[in-house]
Length: 382
Image 1 (cartoon, rainbow, N blue to C red):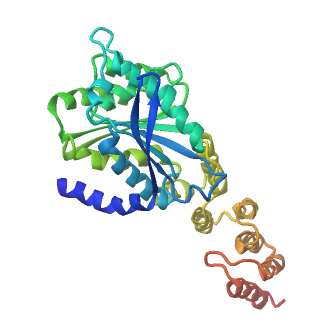
Image 2 (cartoon, rainbow, N blue to C red):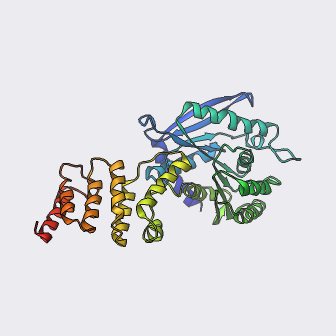
Image 3 (cartoon, helix red, strand yellow):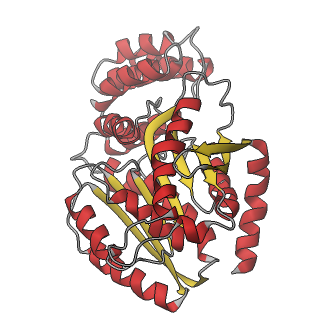
């Protein structure tokens, strides 16, 4: 397992080195001291002046920052998740104090209360003021800090939408508190929980109990995932949990998958073009991100229409393609296919011919489009 974790580090290190990492010292009035943070900005952050990014706050940043930053950079490179700003808080030598809670109410106390306010009231505000942040935030922690991050979930208006718990060392009453809040949440929340077969026994017992409680909840606004990794220790599970957590949170963001294609788009009760529209509307609503529809997603819808022979779907798809890829042959091709399959061959032929002078895209070029026009001409003797 350690070999797998080492391989993960080897794979992501070059990605980290290609992204922009900033080392900063942040002053805290709450703690009356300074804290060191690391910030990874997305690739081409400076060039994309109009683009805004979700924020991932990584506790235990002295050792968790690099794995999280590397995975985010890698997945976002392939557009499976959005690009994000990663903020790591170094806690070497202070994590016990930072994570402290009292023995009566089991809520942050002393240094823990100060650190809680520093993160929620000072650090996040500083990041928002300095960088272009989208209104979507995730927090990540491991054992003590994984327990600590849940205190933000207990606030009347939580500042984080996503909570990644890596083998949390749960405080007394924490499991009941988490379950109660998640059962009643009126805003979308993502909650991830992980342990491993070789995790610390007393931690694993509490984690499995918490999983049973959350799994029994019935709340459509809760997106929950639990992993119990085989042969994973308290430390090695981290390398497997981070990508699993990130994928689960941004499941809807990624390109149309083979599963979506087979189980959704090929069902004749579903409008493929409407599904595409709703997918991207969900991305904007959930993550506060406006995103151009991917070319590959247009092609997936095209394939589904060809497979199901629902030719009327091409009409709406053509209009959508014109909005997202204007000046290319994509919209023209979909319009021509609509006319061709709904009984208007002459109009289809002329539409194919209209592609001359437009930009080629995907498999569509002038030769392809003119050949489609000539085939109709031959078949119908025009």
